Amino acid sequence: MKLVKSVQRAISVLFVVTQSEEPLGLSEIARRIGLDKATVLRLLATLEDSKLVQKDPINKNYSGGANLSRLSNSWRNDIRQVCGPYLRALSQVVNETVCLNCPRDLERICIESLPAQNQELTVVPNIGTANPIYAGASGKVLMAYMSPQEADRVIEMTNLKPVTDIGITDRKLLLKHLELVRERGFDYSIGDVTVGASALAAPIFGTDQQIVAALTVRGPEIRMTESKMKQLAPSIIKFADDISAELGFTNLDRLKTG
Image 1 (cartoon, helix red, strand yellow):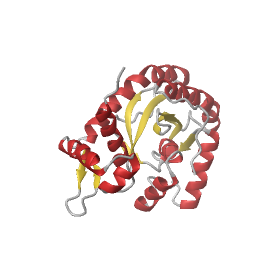
Image 2 (tube, one colour):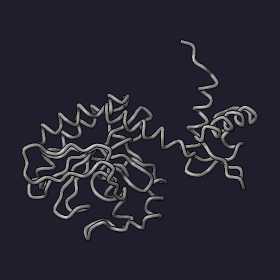
Image 3 (tube, rainbow, N blue to C red):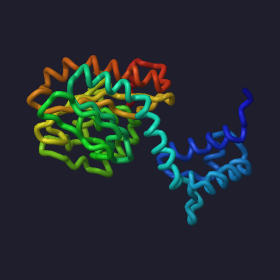
Image 4 (cartoon, rainbow, N blue to C red):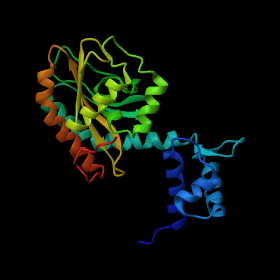
């Protein structure tokens, strides 16, 4: 099938702008994708008209536009559909609440939550619940596979303000913990976000080799002890790997960043 070159170029421009940690000028965007400035300017004007990028009126640099959230919401619906069967299957294996958490700037947001069946005492986050991305097993899994620059930005902008009294507040300790998460491929926490609640999480990757979500099992500390979570870890890693493969991720060796 013949591809539409202008659409390919527009997508390349959108990727360059949205994946940059700071707004970019026309010359830099053109340099990164290897096109002349006149062509890139036309593509940017088209994207700007659709509110997928926006131009700073003062310095003329470009960043992501307001309508990116509409694409993001569509993507979240897609990933929920892909993950649905795996979440239901994992729920049967662990008999605890199973969640899907996605990064959202300095937060991570719960986009799916399946309550534990046949358990009187459960821990069930509402869909849409947001927590600091550095807090809890889900957040630390997401942070572990960020670029070092992204992780530094999170630390600098949040000062690692703890959600509960046991949260990690020291930069060096957090970075050391994230290295451990990458080494073992999962993380667990007890009382880091909710006192008396435990969480076990593993990373889900997409086609661009970037982390897209954390697969999480949550339950009361009385059932989900440290030893129990270590016992469940191979299962959640296997399910997360299967989801990653379904999303097009081809390198199932754990990615190490930093």
